[in-house]
Image (cartoon, rainbow, N blue to C red; front, side, top):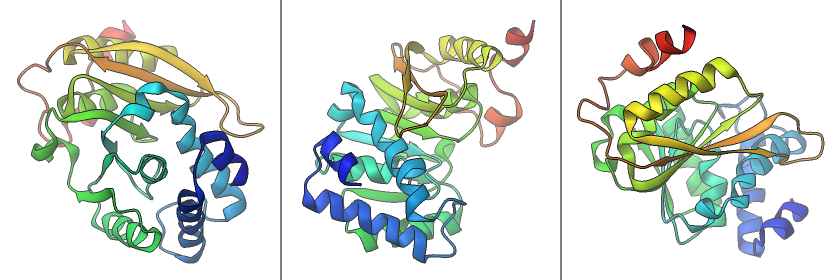
Length: 232
């Protein structure tokens, strides 16, 4: 944790908030993650979230949405690192939303809030986010469809991925073109020693997303954009 605080220029209050986050994960048996021990979570959750600070677009963002926030990653560590930003933790499952609210209260992170809804139904977030982040949410084409409507024009999606997959990326390229997005970078990262095959995929919203998106809840997963074309 000290190494991470030094690497990303975090002060003592921010360090204490991240330490408290690890304590909540370890203590709460209902935390929605299989990685709860501090020794593992500091790498798998904290370091993996904060590595996005290597990107200028992340450091400058003022309105951030974390899609499928789950146990709070990467959204809560990013909120800690940027106390001037507003972070919406989008989560559709009530149990996870309850945990997120508890986590924020226990860590004193007051610039983030749990939004208990499906992203397709998050009408208040339409077109108003500088940055959307997604970690282990769904296939990339699906994540793009979730993200595009809630990004402002010129806003950026950062999608955490492991090993690169040609089919997935092909589907994503087709989906991006339909949604008004453009892939601008794939950054290989190593958030902790020994981490392998981890990448941040960056997409910028270059055109307004067409009418008809988002489709009704569940359709992005059921019929992902670009699936048929990418397999041909």
